Image 1: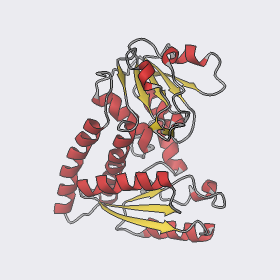
Image 2: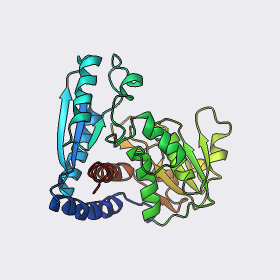
Image 3: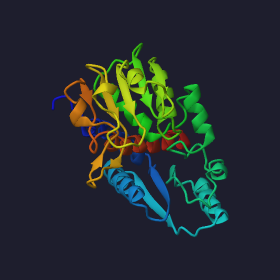
Image 4: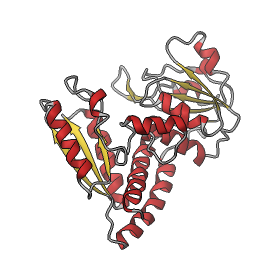
Length: 284
């Protein structure tokens, strides 16, 4: 079981640094604040919200939750978002997605202030990820993937990395962030031919496809590093990742567990983005 690398030490290290930064800001009369915008009460949203609120409290970041009913209209949602854009006490805005079908993310994503968009909803921040512009806010989960690899001293420069999944939430931005670390990145998906052959050539495999225990022993190279981003519920109602951890753990050199892996680092990255946004908005 030595190959299991947990997210907690990574999250705690990020948090330690942020606690000091927040103390320095508060000494100047600046109080970093996150506003969470949530429509309805989906289990996944509530779980992430609890983790985010707990992490922010530990670091000293003020939080507020704007909870709206599923019946909220597009106009009402946009008006609430504009209020937060204009509220100088709010430094970071986190909109839970996906939104209900009657709300158009295609329109709403252009409303959120890019300067306060701490989880890459705005196309401005998505473009900055593509350009390698570090003034933006990449999505928290792919950023957590890179933070874990760096924390555990995984060499990325020149290494072969396979990203399994091509969503804008994890797959594509993760590929761009890893490319910025000079890795040679292959993006794999459901149409990739000989998928297991392609992923088994990678030094690092990032699994973000959303299918329970899909990645078996034949998908991984001997001694590879595997980052499991998937959060699924199996037929027994248990939480599990995209990787069949028991099948691959003796073959790989490192693997993140689910739970207690990438997810635990994501809220620390969110907090890091809030502090960064606060500093930029206050020229601090």
